[in-house]
Length: 286
Length: 150
Image (cartoon, rainbow over all chains, first blue to last red; front, side):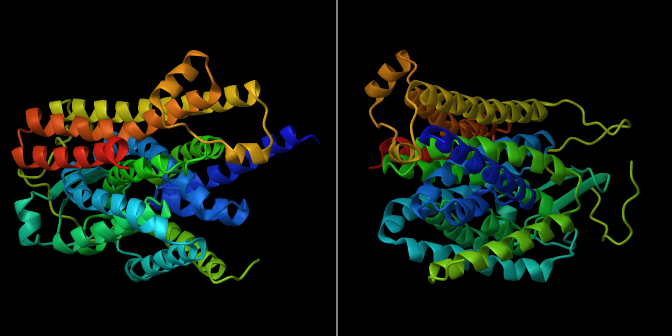
């Protein structure tokens, strides 16, 4: 076949892979970046920097597409999202503009793998907890009015919640921003962990709130990548389109799933991907 | 309504001070409030922003491939231009690459618009000074990254 058809087929392969990346990303609340970068790097043999550029833009598409559903269902806590976002966006810009240019591909892959595996441990420890109970707000959380309620479709009733400890979450979110800026991921991993572990929010609230933040953080980081010319037009178009479609399908599924199942999918996806990236970073090829 | 799962610990009863989700009436549906309207507008912004801009992006892809068929190598070499005048000229000729760039631009602006909407929400509906400022800071940080930074 001629080179143009081959190029078209290549675009379609990218789209299919990105579609599944979007589905997993939406269900696990990660925003897609965590799945897309390894898919493009490992499966499609693209340089990780190109993958990161395409990913950070697609992450915006995913978070916006999926986010519309969360907003409609009144689960997102905008106060928590905006307060933490100050820290996260700052981290993202610092990571993308200052740190990322100084890191080579192997280091990026290793960082990627480590980020995922680190995040896996606390999530495994908490799997099975449907709703946090007896949560008392810390001083900062109280002052910043970090509480709310939502109607849980699966449980069929209104759930009220309060944020526990705010200050550690701010630090975690800065690191989440760094990760977003350096690795091109939504860093939904760390966002969800900061909110579920430190702030003790219900899983659905943290996932929905993270989705909002992921988009904003990714926009801040994407600004840097676009200016550095690391976003390839012919790559980002199929990736963003397919990921968005996948994320919409994944979100519809996720609405009806229990919180426990959400975290399990989250953990399993992280595990496989993390190990693979880590090994690749150290030079093992498959 | 489904029965609550007995294995799941019971959450607190919604308190009068609880945040912004309006209480459900007998039909299990929330009444329409200002809050609801603004959240629906937010959802609308997100839907149009994400699907609209991605559609433009994909349209640009199709245009680019039709106008100037490329092989994979050339595709990987193509880049977005950073010059506004160059892009507007390209748009007038429906140049695929520039249509794609507009798509990206709109996509990246979508979360920014949502933050801007939240500023308005906090300023005029909730009248929450603290969070108006907080959200404004986020807006400024993000805009700076997109338009100002090197």
